Image: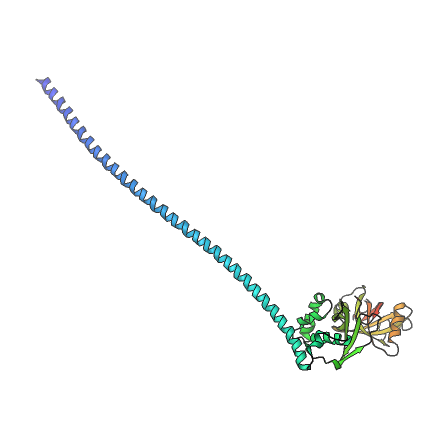
Length: 328
């Protein structure tokens, strides 16, 4: 009886375990089914998200591409606009220069009541010289004068300084031009007087050009700087020269050996007390020009006397030439 009872208990336990196991399997099956549905749902959402991301990326790429194209177009347009603007400004400047030149010529023709053919087709040598002088002096801006001078590129900076300090514009009438004899035998050189000024012109390739450097007494070395810097090197100067009786140290007791020469530059104005040996080629040539109280425009080389502290006392080492215009 006891064994039957034990057997029943065992059998009941097995049946209970089987029932629980069956219930667990069903629960697990339901959980697994729910999980699979969740996975499928997540996969669907992931696919949709990927699709949206791909569309967004494509839209962004298209936008960037369009923006790049627009930037390129803007850059091209900007460059083109700048180029056109530069060309317009350049043409405007050229037109302004041409306008100034035309204005200068018209001013001459109108104020002098001259035949414009006189300027364009001069008939005589004097006409040719005057035809250069008139537009040069009548120019409204100094840059227009570069067309009428020798070595315009080399002299442009010096002219800018000069005309900034001495702005001039004048009508030159033929009767106010005095034709002077040049002091040299150079046939290409012509010298004229206009009021107190002496103007040098040279004929180059059948055209007359003003020797502006000579006409204004321009020197390569600054006269003021020459005085201030102590050195023994001789420098070339265009000077106005005349004999003097002034003997300064260290030449105070050397009157028997040296000529005293008073020199002055005009661009800019500086004065020197120069001395030259009487018994020298330079001394004889200079004295011959300046005797009888003559005043001459000459070119000399001179060096500072280092014993003099003022910088005014110099020694002439070479007589270069008479007059200020050097043959090219």
